[in-house]
Image (cartoon, rainbow, N blue to C red; front, side, top):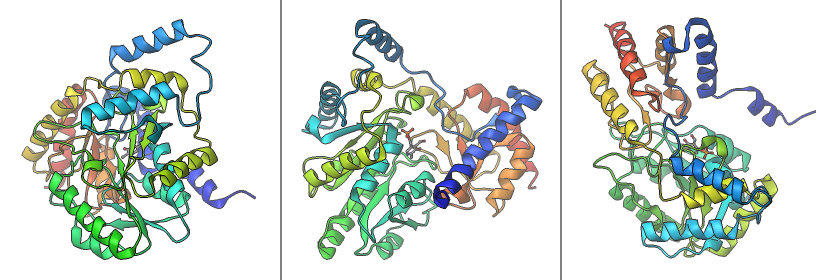
Length: 393
Ligand code: PLP
């Protein structure tokens, strides 16, 4: 006997992985250059040179120490560098002791969700959303409550949000810049969200935590700004990752920040650390604790994502697609040209154009285009997008 839930999770691939694997099979048949794979969010730009240089230097200078266990919550010097960087950038005063280093944003979220969840708790998520949230929330023993997408700008439908709040609401997850819409929540959106959460926390007599999942924090475009969420809502817990900003998804490194001022902050931090222990996420990879903490004020050369966004937004609009302009991340989320986004994605697949149906991401009638690819790939894919649009005329 095994856990049916785990067996299901282990055998059913996500819709994104399914397409990605199909792309590999198709590439073997027709050549990689003839498959236009916009399925997955693997950064297409290399890490800054300083990342590899720092890793090599540390491996050379500390060959006996660099592979050792660190403290469960991360090495003190690495946590201090992260705290100092956050304090410099956001005018804050965080102590290193409020950071918990772990293996990417996925583990950060799991530590927070497992640390917070009590029987009967619910977490609110806004569509469209990163589908692993459901796995993480349910894995923690809580219930996910999904708010339908506000499809004009992908901000928040506050009426629907207010209706979904209940005394069982333990937390709310936000992800800005967003996967899959590329939306950046405006300051006004976050302020309105904070006002509602403050009012409802008071009414229910317990804090509602805002979990800010920020792997795309630095990937923003001209005219858009990502506000520092803990300055807008006190009870914010930040989950961060270097997967996208430093193009290091395979190194599995990120952190949880529980600011001092968060309600019951000492307990929350202790519970996050306890969850990390119970899930086996202690002692994040020690080489990359050091490397990222020494390089955390840089980013990969992310200019190309803006170029890709501009090319896609302009070209797709000319072809008649409805597109909300993304303010960050590297995803575009246009409306499909028929109501059935799965059928639309299948039609695209016949053209070797791999785009992810939005219904699995909580927003039917849309598809996700991951444009973290070479600009030339987008240029060569444009006739395919045109052929797809023409097939509906
Ligand atoms: N959250 C969002 C919104 C993501 O898009 C991803 C990865 O794509 C993650 C979390 C997980 O990131 P990590 O690779 O750091 O675990």
